[in-house]
Amino acid sequence: MSTLKEQLRLDLTAAMKARDELTRATLRMAVAAVQTVEVSGTQARDLSDDEVLAVIGREVKKRHESAETYSAAGRQELADRELAEAGIL
Image (spheres, rainbow, N blue to C red):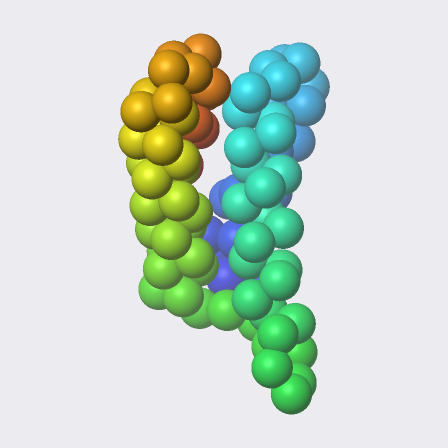
């Protein structure tokens, strides 16, 4: 297991203990995205730190794109949440 993946799990545990809903939900999503990439393809594998960073980078990009879409639609509260999630990642 990569050290970055371990750190994500440790941060998730800390957020759960602190009852920080936004951080907990965001880190759960990030861990799930990493696990999805690990099991995709013909054979399951562990990701390197660089690959985990690439997955997190894609998730940040998704959050920024969603925030732009929500802002354009006049849903600023949802845009703010997406930007907060991007900041956590």
